[in-house]
Image (cartoon, rainbow, N blue to C red; front, side, top):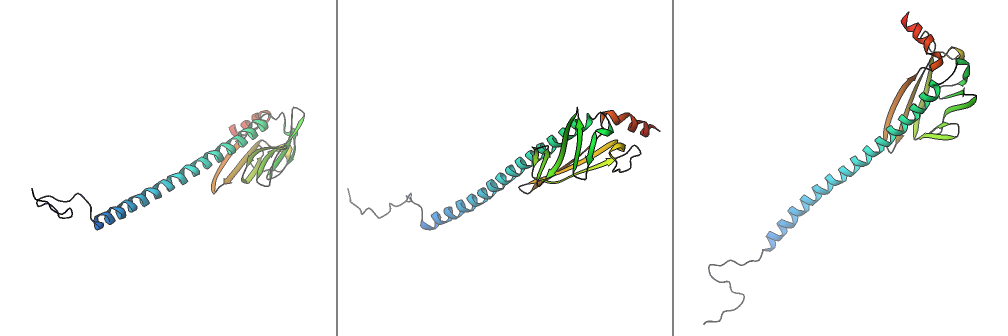
Length: 176
């Protein structure tokens, strides 16, 4: 048997190693794929965070307007409204004074924060003819709008409230 040097390839067989160029090409291709994959993952993370923020904003705005509608819907008479403004209302409910007001970026019921990140909160008051009014005794419908903006994700909701004791007057006007 003849002895041959180790670094001499055997005829007809190919060596099992990769060349430097092949390795460089593989590294470049893997880098491109990893870069694209990382970009997709980062965008998915941003979308997830934004959808979570929008969901939280919607939940807070919905809670605040629902609470407002429930409280104002139970007014016994128009005389229970003691003060009204473009972003606040004070009324008596079962003899207890209640105030909804925007303070800074919070919507408050008394001293309790109903929603934070409030960029706008407005109330509009309508009489039985559907005209805007500033007289608490003539209020038959109250329109409320809230916008919550946190982390660059804003959502706006609005509702109309017909206080229970005042509905018949408003509905009579609509039927005429």
